[in-house]
Image (tube, rainbow, N blue to C red; front, side, top):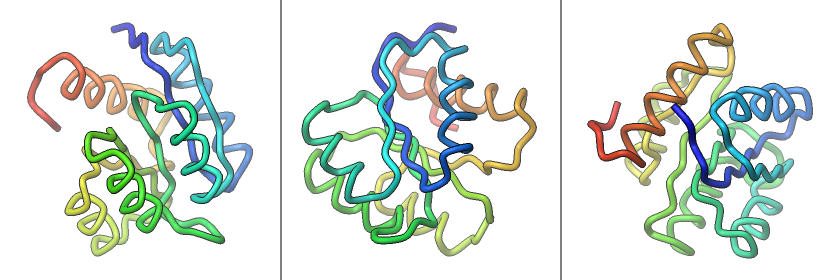
Length: 131
């Protein structure tokens, strides 16, 4: 699969942003933006309007749930996949209720994360079933 859209990766940990960047490059994403927190993510989203946002749930300044809610106000059609290092069921359910299309655990093995990303992107952008 090849994804030709732009992606915004939001995580407060630089090594996670780098890891996710390497993964999405394998999917063919030509343009990748990075943000270290929710506030920076909102500014970049407003300026760049990426096709997909990969958004960490747990961050300082503005957590991913608040950033998701504000993104969806800014753009009700924003496509957001939540990233989490902890599968806190309540946070995941809240994210899905607020319009996230899926969530991925950051501790998934690389191949599994790549497969889950590809499946979600195909479902959302190629008209397949949502995961």
